[in-house]
Amino acid sequence: MRKLLPLFLLLSLSLQTAFAAGAFTSEQYKKALWMVTRMYGGQRSGIGPNWLIMEHSNPAYRTSFTKDADGSHNLEGGWFDCGDHVLFGHTFFYATYMLAKAYDVFPEGFHDLYNGKDYSDYMESGDWSINGGKPNGIPDLLEELKYATDWIIKATPSTTRFYYEKGEGGPDHQTWVTAGKMSTQPVAQGGEPRVIAKDPDDGRMASFAAATMAVMSRIYRKYDEEYADLVLEHAKNAYGYAKPRKDKSAGASSGSYYGSTKDPSTTFLIAAAEMFITTGESTYKSDINKNDVKDHYWAFDYANPHDLAAYAAAMAVSEDKSTHLKFMLDNFIAGKYVNATNSEKISTAGGGWGQLRYPANHAFSTALYSNAMSITQYDQFIYDQVDYILGNNNAKQSFVVGFCEGCSKEALKPHHRNVFLNDEDDIGNHLTIPARNKYFGYMVGGNRSSGSYVDDIESYENTEGGLDYNAGLLGALAYVVSKVAPADTSKFGVINEPDPPDPDPDPNPITAKPNELIAQNSVIRFAGAYVFPAQSKSFTVRVYNPKGNVVSVIKSNGEAVKFTPQNMGIYFAKIKN
Image (tube, rainbow, N blue to C red; front, side, top):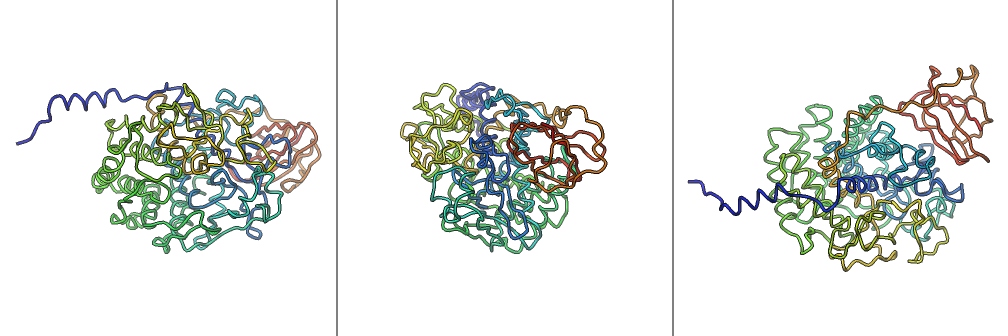
């Protein structure tokens, strides 16, 4: 005989589901996700542009580490790890997958509010708030993510070569200066040429690279089929590198900043699942070992991505879906997260360094599960984690730099070099964030007890953030925004046309190299991305395809600008003052 739940309990559960709600308005959640997404543009290494430093008072410091290379192999680009200027593969590849997966599952959470390729709209308006950008037909998250996948293409040239780290923690941490300034310093102080690490005895990082590129091939195909095909080829390269090393894990090349992790084969399962979903090829399905769906016995973070493995396996293999989702519920969602919160309703699983990454990740994991099961039972838990981080807590303390909607205390002293635009090598709480960088969107490590947080720039355990910290919050916010302020995805892919084309380009164009100064009105011919060097006054670049149609118009106040094509091939450009 079936036992019936007491009426009051049924009513309680029903009300909890029906009235799960957040503390902020739909527009405020949308604003939070906007800045948490754009944060990644402030982590750009290389030509960028990195929006935090692209208007640096010293034009020489508006780009950084443009000489990153392994011999003749160009490795410029990618993202900085945290508040420093090293690219660590341990968090980089994990974060790119988290972002790709967030878009894959919650596409309606992501709006098109700005030009994420070059931030020219903000430059033109002079307004770096949410109101200063202009839609360009591509969701902002995809443009931020593409900057990272452009670098993964460089990092995965074959199945036997894999690049995973740029720079060294020791030299990088010698001075407190912007990335542009650090690039010019001696090598011992983090300057160029930097050490490039490659070919680790590790399958975990390459697995995340493969998974990222497999997902990117799906989600970016609407905007550029050739690019989608290209990233899939590099997904195969990364997968080929990872497979013989699927049981291996290595620490960071430059010291103990990141150690080896347990259960690396769990991450390989994620790669196999995503490759199978993208390609439908049985060889990838045969690599999905259900025994690698395991419990981390800890909490969800870059070193313990077991939640992602259970979810990916469930989505890839229909016959095992219910089994893997039940495992996810029993061991993670109900087993460790939802039923283990403190008096401020924040998840308590996880460690004391960078505390808020854990509740953010747990909210994202719960959102993935809820979406797969088409339930709302755990929505209040998701809202509670997000709301606490945004400032709905006992102290009214916001833990996201630039977000303060009804808060009493802001995170104003993040442990982050570029945001302060200060090159005096003088770390301290006297530093203030310039107005243009106010809306950074950087989630600090924070504290599970809101009143115990100390906003101290030198307390990096609490005030530093990172690629991986923001990733979980971004995913959880995407779930919320997809419900309360969904984007109209049917409008995406319609890119605003630039000004009408000039007369046909000069029939005898100059073939130029990037960074080479070209006289105005000369027509240059180039392939792929191109950097137009700084000039003494404002100038405008018009880029044409071989048919003579204008594909891009770039305006500059005199600083160097970069054209990155949506499709690889030959282009022409004319510079006018």
